[in-house]
Image 1 (cartoon, rainbow over the protein chains, first blue to last red):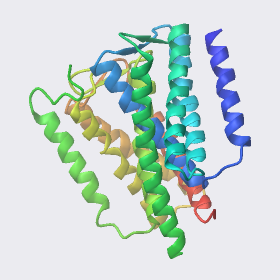
Image 2: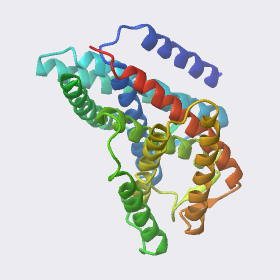
Image 3: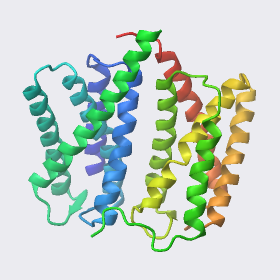
Image 4: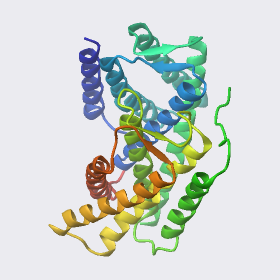
Length: 157
Length: 166
C-alpha cells in the first residue's frame, strides 16, 4: 500500500514538473536535479551512518518507497522552488520562498515518519526545517553559479 | 559524534585513493578543451552523481552488496573517493568525440570502456577500497554497460540542449 501510494505521488510530481512552464534552460534543470540528488545522498549518509539520527525502514516496500522520494520527489520539489526563486526580486520574498520550501520538505519528513518509512531519533520539526533550509541555500548557490556560467557562455557565443 | 571521521590509520588504501584522485585529474587537465565549460561541468556532475546513486542502490540497505573503505560510516576518504569517478566520465566522452566513434562502433566502445572499468575496480578491490558481500566483477561489468551507455545518451542530450535560449 505504501509503495503504491509513493509511486502514485512520484508519477503525480513528475507530471506536474513536465507539464508546468519552465523558467530555466534544460541543462540548468538537469544540473540542479543532479546536484540535489548528490547533496542529499551525502547529507543523508552523514545523518544516518555517522550521526545515527535517521534510519530507513528495513521493510523492503518502505525502503524502495524512500528511493522514489529521495531521487524524484525531493529533487522535483526543490526544482519547483528554484524556478520560483529566480522570478522573485525582493530579498524578503526570496527568504520566505526558501523557508516555505524547507517547511514543505519538512512536512514530507513528517509524513515519512508517520508511515514508518523513516525512523528518527530525537526528531523535532524545527531541526528538520533548519537542515532543509541550509540544504536549499546550498542548492541555490550551486544554481546561481551554474546560471552565471550559462549566461556568460551565451554572451560569448 | 563525528560528522566526517578521518581514517583511523593512513595505510596503503588511503594512499591509493589519494593517488587515484591525483592521477585521474592529471589525466584530464592537459586535454585540449573540446566542449564548453557548462557541458564539461554537466559531464563531471553526471560521473559524480551516477556513481553515488549506484552506491546507494547496490551498496546500501536493503541490498547492501558491498562496503566502501573501513566502516559503514561516511568517512573523509569516501568523499575523496567520489571525486575519482568524474574525470573518467569526462575522459570517456572526450575519447568518444576525439575518435569520432559513431554507429555500431559505439557498442564496441562501450564494451571496451566497461572492460577498463572492471579492471580499475579490480585494482580498487585489491587495495581494499571495496569489500564485496555477494557482489562480483561480472555484475559490475553489466552495471558499467548501463552507466556508460547512459553517459553517452546523457552527453547527446545535453549537447542538443546547449544552444537553447532563454
